[in-house]
Image 1 (cartoon, rainbow, N blue to C red):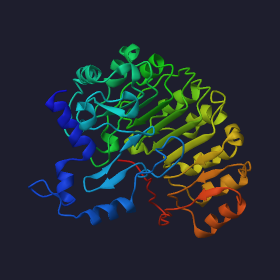
Image 2: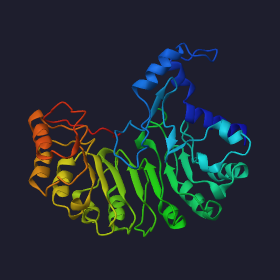
Image 3: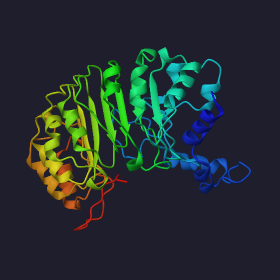
Image 4: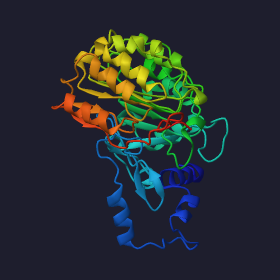
Length: 370
């Protein structure tokens, strides 16, 4: 492992020096805060142990807060490997999610060197036993193609996160993606794919027989990506989550673009559907209210967007959702009266109506955009 590679690991996973200074880091490398302060901060905002993929949680729910700022510590139920794991003797590849870099989250560049980073990792860790990879960086256009070309060296890869970048390091709208289709084509046994950021993101309709979880974290998801998901055949997909975002950041998806997803024709195993973070959340809710896929869902998330009483009324007036186990509407613009109506109409459903937003006539902001 090169010193540069390990330095990136330390900076990205543990937090930048600037963030640490803001949190009380001093010039001699020690914290001004004592252990009680750190324990109190961790207790207040712990990392969510579910690791999104099996549940819908708030945008900040997967992050662990400590004196280094906000960062993810796990992915797909595995701790993200830090420098100590990589330089240690004979690390067990199955016990970590392994980080790679396509671009630098501190400096914008062309992402060159991803292939070299993969070679370095595989020179130290047995790639045939790696189960999870997280790709960190501001420009991730190279990663899908390089990973696809090396699929034979990663036969047990089951979980992949493209854009494993914390908000502390890089705004979600700044993260550059590319065509992610090669990854799905080259890894037929992949079970989970997470994508954060959508600038330049492309996807062609595919058939994938193993994928169970597909998540797009975005401040603006392009309509053509939404359509491609709906036109794909994903017979094992159980959890689909898309953050639709706003038009200002490329989120031009319409309700019509959701038609394939809402029909459920290519998603026979789908049980958890999240259409989140949308400025047209009322229209999305109205479409979901009559969607064929709704009858077989166990969990539905219409959270983080500009949902108002009009959208909630559509849900209550459409097909019954009393069969749901969980309805996630957190971060919403409902009145107290409408929130009470929703709860009353769904007595056996766990309804999340947390984070009510101030009711404004003209401006309603989604939870995640820039």
